[in-house]
Image 1 (cartoon, rainbow, N blue to C red):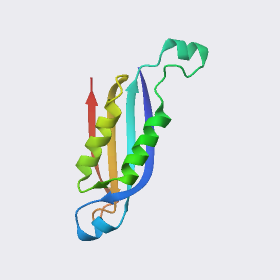
Image 2: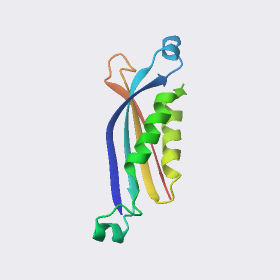
Image 3: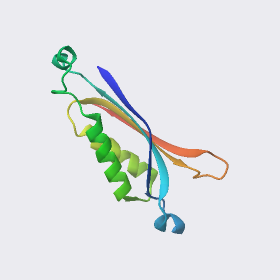
Length: 117
């Protein structure tokens, strides 16, 4: 097994349900951990055949988040986790989404979910 980590992916989206949040995009910081198996053939040949394409899933996450509207951090996190788990090669995944400055005296508020097969 191997673990891919995408760290501190900074995106902007509509997140929240307060009036100003419905009309102004805000920053979110996304961290992904994805456990997959890497085919021995790829490790021996140094060729990408059959490997999990972390660039592809990251692009899907970026498009989904930037084009979306979410009232709840929980729903955004759940939907990203489900998107990652669509690929049968993923054995385990964890998604954490931070909403910076969501609370007055806190750096951020985050929500984290994980799933496994």
